[in-house]
Image (cartoon, rainbow, N blue to C red; front, side, top):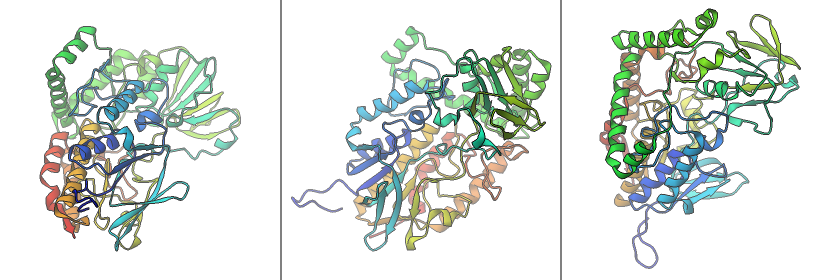
Length: 493
């Protein structure tokens, strides 16, 4: 990492970026802006976008406003308040090309493992197919919601019709005139249901536990609005700042003892009363737990879709499948043609598809013992030169893209530090990591106590600890990732 053969200073450590979603793209941009050009972005899919490449279900769109769900360093001509999947995929490609990152990408290549070689101070990165390549630094940008959670219902394999998870949507199956069951009422299901309700003959929506829902308010920007945003980029920045401020106010609702909690509950109940026609359905859709215990859902079309005569809400868990149908907890069987599983993801199983080995060959999953934790949600002691985006306790903060951008900045700063100080390795101080985790745990109990109430959510590991959520608005994470990194890392020449 010192000089090339012709005497010029080289461009820094060789970096492997795993994943070309928005996190991987942000990392590439940050590295390139800092003069680090020896990096490769590995992506197992055939194009950029990450979750917006993989998820192709009907109605797929973001539930965070577009001007917040985007990078701070680049304005964009968004067509909608909340971008659809196709536009988000276009955005990923636009940023990739805007910063000339496509030549760094290797699409259709899956990384299986990264093993630290202490003597050589590098990672041996093994690709699917068996090839191994050396890298000084590995930055995982695999995301949080990328491993579908499949149910283990008895008889599932015996069902005779098509069955698929929403994250693996089987577009070859035409749903027109079919009897369809959608299992789940989370964010994905609330987009799928209104998108297919007018197409199918009969739609059964299975709900194990209701969630608090408010309308999203999505719409197309008017030509005048788009013209203003294009000609006056500062208006995009002002809109973005306002959105983050509004979330800071709403975030107070996660405190069980605050006034905002009661305000959120009242708004949600009023929305149910105003939108859902049938009294029994209204009752079934009303949770008995605090707002914010589950991830709050923003969906404008879901409740109206339940009013359709061909749509039935089944407020019971699924217990088993038969060759011709689906059985709920009351023992009632409904014959269906197609099964759609909107059953979520393995959110607490961080780095599920990647075998990371640190000092002494110890695997990161063995270190965690089903209780993932990381300094700033980015690094783990004993795993030098390894960084991850969307790590433990970083989900939330309003816009995950803003969170990813900060994490990419931290990783890039450490790579630059390695180059400037001629360091072979940068590791995390154990004490700093432990103090960070204890602080996060305290903040969760203090500021987001609703997440710890009695409901079923994806936040908690087997130990019962909340391992996914960031307990404050994004601004605090921004400041902490500015101030703390240099205190938490130790270098080695």
